[in-house]
Image 1 (tube, rainbow, N blue to C red):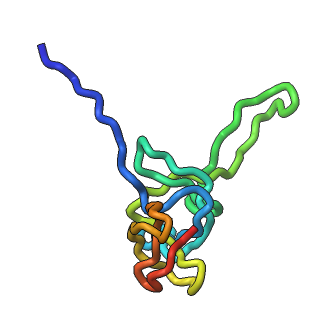
Image 2 (tube, rainbow, N blue to C red; image 1 turned 90 degrees about the horizontal axis):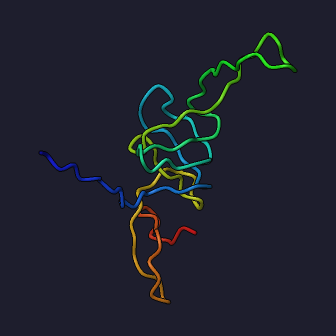
Length: 115
């Protein structure tokens, strides 16, 4: 009998909800938007106005014919890059301790902390 081990995803992502990001590869390359949600289980993020898909809604009492709705779908985290709030350009992210000893993200381009 084979034992199955449940894999926990304790990876720290370089982006979080509310960050402004730019898509660096794929069909939506070059588009920018704010992160609405980070889906840790799938290593994906939902970005406002990017990767819109059509969702078919079932008929209801208020809309007997049903409807179509455009919603954002997830994009893999590796295809996103954080936009530096100071320069407006995409930047890589590092982590270092601030003067209070708290671990914070910083921009590798400007060497400044990102809140």
